[in-house]
Amino acid sequence: MPQLSPSMAFLMFATILLMTLVLLVKISYSNPSLKSSLSLSKTFKKYYL
Image (cartoon, rainbow, N blue to C red; front, top):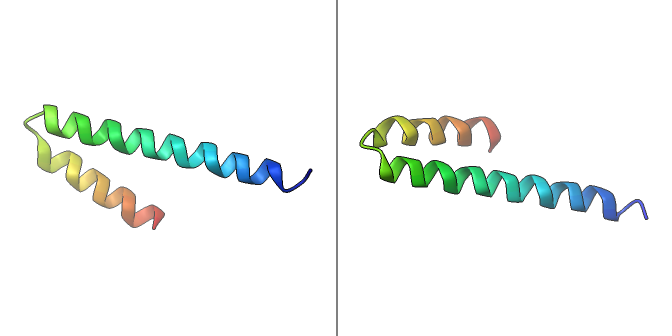
């Protein structure tokens, strides 16, 4: 099955990306330095989207 492997890899990559984004948001909300993490996520979006 050649079609299953790439889709599973993409799913795993997507879940890892989502988890890291959620972690970043949680950290930004718990920390007072909200602007730095927000700018970090913005640059992250610039490079990936």
